[in-house]
Length: 426
Image (tube, rainbow, N blue to C red):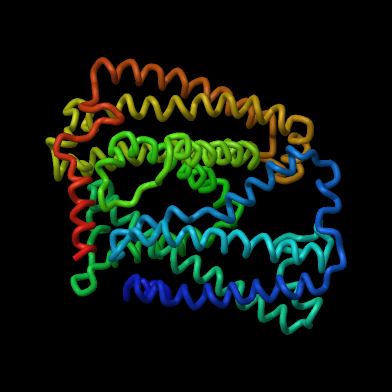
């Protein structure tokens, strides 16, 4: 409730609170780094890989950790429209990302060299606080624990701000109940969306963290693939020559493609090596996205309700024109991904997976490794066939008004961006 109140007061208060938290967190990790390096007793790269693991196995687990540590930067865009000069965001990233990287790398190395026992580092084992408690005393470890709690508060505070705007945008685009888009007359903030997100959070707190990650993890990773694809489409649809006064990634096409392809490759690898249960159950959340879109589009009308000429509806399907083909492509991508992924996982985890999942879960579908692989293969095959049918039917009976890289006739994006740039100059 405290952070709900802070968010209702506005982004200014959210930023102020998180700035204070961030300074305290950086000071705490700086102390961990200094104390750790001053008490160097161990070789941080010995052993180079855990016993029984190859470099490929170690890299797979590392990618998952790195993605988890660095995810969330895309949430900034949700609040960009409420910032006087949103071009400070990419400039800020240039400063913040190296600081974030160092705040993870240096304290971790400091822990390895001072406390050692790399195999005991875990949520229920050794941690950064142990560096201070073992080297300076128990009280210092308790102080770091308080700071660690503050870091989670900061994350939640920012999560409310960004997540509520995502709900608001869906409602404003007529793709969820309109009441969620209701804003405070006094502050203009999406109060209902904030309250809805708090209620959802209270409900989700009753589930264990592993269950939440199995359900939500794949969706979070898919966001990064989608962002990369969106950048390529936007660069083609809105050439940089037309973006006077607007921020864009400067450089050659090769540079832009590198920015897109590298994260996509890392994300796909992360999805594959995160575990077969994550891989399989993630398709449930992926599938519900399509079902909810279809239901909400039919019930609330989507963008066609406010601009039917630019976003026409197919009266037969009550979806946007071309949606059958788009859904087919979506299903095809994940159908093929399920097939290819099942082959990779059979090779990657086949030698130890059956025993591991049985010991980990005891009973049920996710305790049976080969049954999960079989479900992925059968499901992938069914999805692929269904997708081919949808694409064929869609191209024949539900053609899109525009191609993927073609703008709407009265697309206001460039004009609005130029207007914002002029307003900032004034």
